[in-house]
Amino acid sequence: MTSLKDQTIGFVGLGMMGLPMARNLVNDGYTVTVFDLNDATVNAAKEFGAASEESGAAVARISNIVITMVPDSEHVEAVIAGPNGILEGLQKGSVVIDMSTIDPEMGKKMSNLIEAQGSSFIDAPVTGGVGGAEAGTLSILVGGNAEIFERALPVLNVLGGDVSHMGPVGSGHTTKIANQLIGVATLAGISEAFVLAKKSGLDMQAFFDAVKNGAGRSWALETLGPKILEGDFAPGFMVKHMQKDLRLAGQIAADTGTALPTSTLIAQLYRSVQADGPEAVNQGHQALVQAIEKMSNEEARS
Image 1: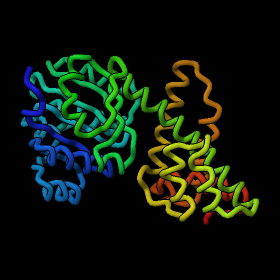
Image 2: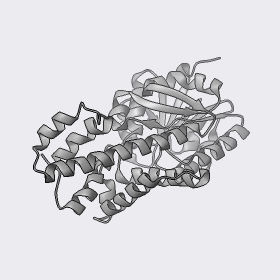
Image 3: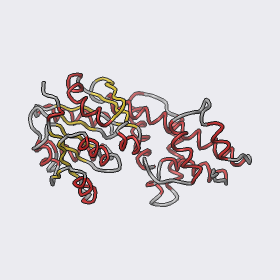
Image 4: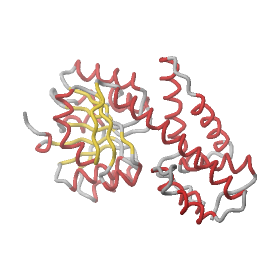
């Protein structure tokens, strides 16, 4: 079977994650054609060697594999099944890879539509943030047919350092959402610990240095801890996107009868952050600490 390495790639969605991912594909030698509603990101993609088209349909007509990387379920549905969407131009035998984090049921719906046209779909959401997207070290969680997974693997290996096949379509999306619960619960613990340490009079840099390699060691502590200490809430992953992922987790929990008491509380804490103004949700998700700071009348800064 022909490797996708020798074929053309369409990339729809050039946000904070999608743009560096497309760049890595171009740098690895793939022919990449992009589409995004933001002209600035399209122009940035052209600068590193990508071509562009005016719609998802136009991208799909000239691509053997089409990657989508957009914010939420309704955006995936729009770029695939909406007017001028990918379905209108999709070639028979092509592969669509959705790398967004969305409702698994939406992924299954898109898979059914794509398969009805003689093409294939896998869900392959990612974790690792903007840094992982830029470095090509993302963890990629894949749901779909095993044979299609193997066809797509050369492309996925360019984008990620750890690619896992989790099962049928929807399994990747479900795994990513469960992963988010682990990450955000860890961040909540970090937020509480930092505020407690500061309010108790500890030197914050000394505190961080002491605990960063202890039992609480984690990606969140190593990556977001220094940002919290510096008061750096620039987004690598936005508050509004974590709120969306918590909402998706709640939907799955309702469908499966799963209790999520910790995640439900964290969602409430993010609503407290959101109450600070319309731009609050565009901060990095480490802004969760701000909710604890407000309740404690203390900022966890070094």
